Image (cartoon, rainbow, N blue to C red; front, side):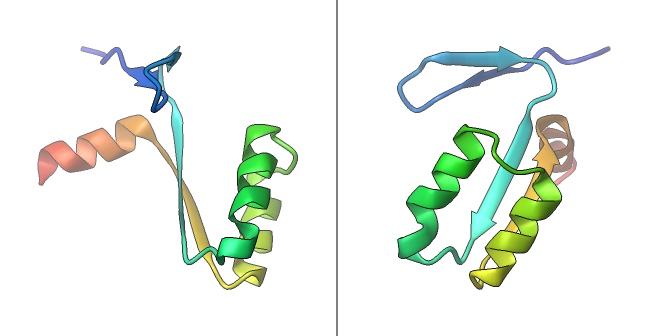
Length: 76
C-alpha cells in the first residue's frame, strides 16, 4: 500500500503531495543562511554543487526523500 503524503509550509500553505525531498542543513554560518535560502528557493544550483558550496562554508547538507525519513522513523 502506498502512502499519500501532504507537505505544508510554516504558514499552513499547501506545498505538494507525493515523495517530497527534504534538505537538512547544519553548521551554516549566520552570514550565509539567507543566501542558502535564496539558492534553494530559486533552485539555482544542482544538489551536488549546493553541497560543495555549503561544505566550503564549513557546514553540512543532506537531502532525503520524505518517505525514507518516515520509514526510518517508524522502524525506530
